[in-house]
Length: 111
Length: 117
Image 1: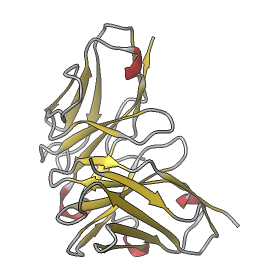
Image 2: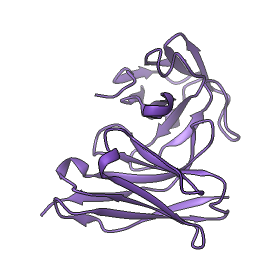
Image 3: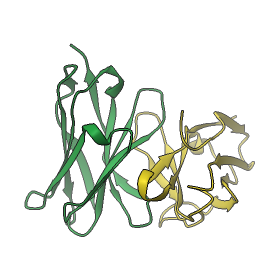
Image 4: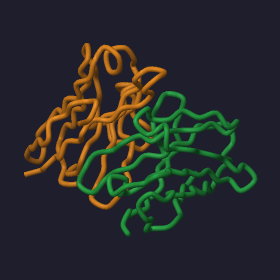
């Protein structure tokens, strides 16, 4: 069982927006603005899409945005495109004993 | 740009030690954290641990008793050893650079390690 809870799957049609939630606790997501999101296509390595809750690395489309409220972080993808279909994982710093925890992953299907 | 490449045996026998190396190219290994992350087939990501080029390490508490990480700055490589492996350790193992803000970027392509007799 993963430390962070994500929905197993979400779906949306091209052009629509979707949001993936990532629920943790006051020891991880709730205590630190150190949440990151990763996109993983089948057979590929994960790629960082968001870091420090809402920052986008250079080269990542501004259709991807992140936010946080309490113990829940969220990834929003607007203007869905076929290429966005992938698995998405959230990740958070969890303090100086546990350090890093991941979510179980969410499979995004573009209908 | 920095690129990472994992290498090591793809098959390890139960109770033996899994050993992997990550070679960093396109930049210096110095002054960064470097991490190992694994992913069993069809499942999610699990952080194994990280090390700084000074040699300091932090490990996942659930694996800490079996993990050792090391770095060879002269070769721009860092390594993972996981002892007493079982079938549960079968996974794709990724190496990645870990920034001070706990983001992983870039990643290696991953290497599948199967634990089987």
